[in-house]
Image (cartoon, rainbow, N blue to C red; front, side):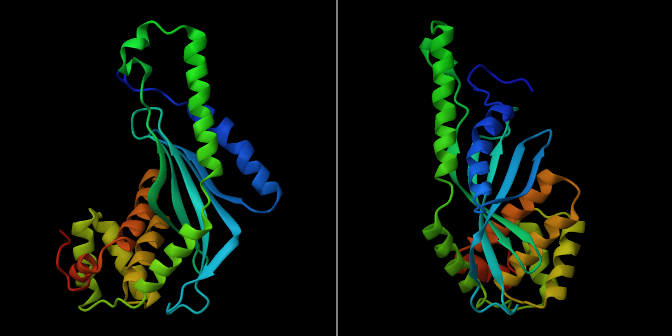
Length: 249
């Protein structure tokens, strides 16, 4: 990739060397397990869950619908995004994952973005880089927030009561247009929605995140997991547009 001198590269290796020892400590205590890890042409991904932090979705049509807290770590060396930590929720009924909005982000702000970039000594720049990685370390330690997870569970439980008001095929078609799903993805979402039999906002969310398992691209699968989070975050008015087959503004 060709980036300007305003883009400060945070190497994936540096991120891994900073993040993994902290996560390793939690794994040794049985507090954490790794769901998946991948380096694509675009990004570095690391998805983890906390097995001991589980809650049940109240009102779900799936009996014993348990979700587990987690986090997603992402980074790009090629200008595709910042280092970020996002909320991640794993649904145990079918091992779907949902990525929610980034909670912590560190921009790749280059040293040359100010007039000092040309005159700083190498050891000063190295110290600056170490300070940045210390921020990454602290962000990793702060990634788990039980209170925030419990609020998310309440939010998810509320979606079980918001029913689809028209034919499922019409709802999925509107969702596909509103959230840029391909034809094949649209077909998969409809299939999983009908198979799951949950004609609610929660059912649509899980149909979308289940579709993430059907695509070959890890980048796209992660985007679909994020789309599930976006549908969760729809306001009641926005969801009503989907539920009545009107395109979301």
